[in-house]
Amino acid sequence: MRLFISATNIRPITRIASRRSPGCSTIAGQDLPGFRDQTLAYFAVMHALMTKLLPLQAVAFGLPADYLVNHEGFKPMNCTLRLLNYPPRVTENQGQYGIGPHTDFGYCTLLAQAKKPGLEILTKSGEWVQAPAHDGMLLYNNADLLQRWTNDRWRSAPHRVFNLEGDERYSIPFFISPRWDVQLECLPTCQSADDPPKYRPISRAEYQAELKRTVYELPGKGS
Ligand SMILES: [Fe+2]
Image (cartoon, rainbow, N blue to C red; front, side):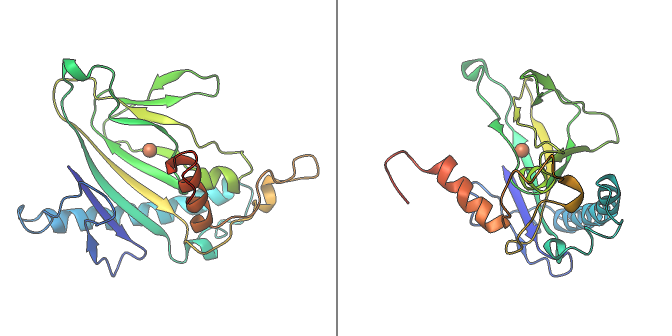
């Protein structure tokens, strides 16, 4: 079961479940009393957390603390919450992915996950390692647009999931992305004469279209 919540602004959250995401549940607010309110409250807290992280990131890039918060790309910030369930592992499906290797498309992801092994991250040296899952902690993951924005200074690490156990596994990713229509140029502090921009300026919409062509289309099928 997957529940998908998306909003470009925390106040007018109007969509719970999405027709774009096959398998999405529409149980929120219907079958589980309090579930919708709890989920929306969680969404609001995560949104607030990200607005506190953006100034820290800006400072880490050598930029004014309000640079990202005031960037057009985050007016508004685009956030998506997914509630993911991985079915118990069964021997017939040994080796089958819960989620195959991929990088996240947007800016970054904040992940709450069950205290169970399953999420693996590919290191720069090509080794898959188990991601830590500690009590009371969220896992932070850079996504593709952040890697491009920082000229590869921050890496969007490939990751994958196996449910290694015989019972259910849950994780709750909160995806943060910039606005669809804003061009992201290499950050001024992430380039120099010796390290010019590696990527052309691109909007989230253009990048997603590019990914669709390279990831989803079959050879020889065209668009
Ligand atoms: Fe991911």
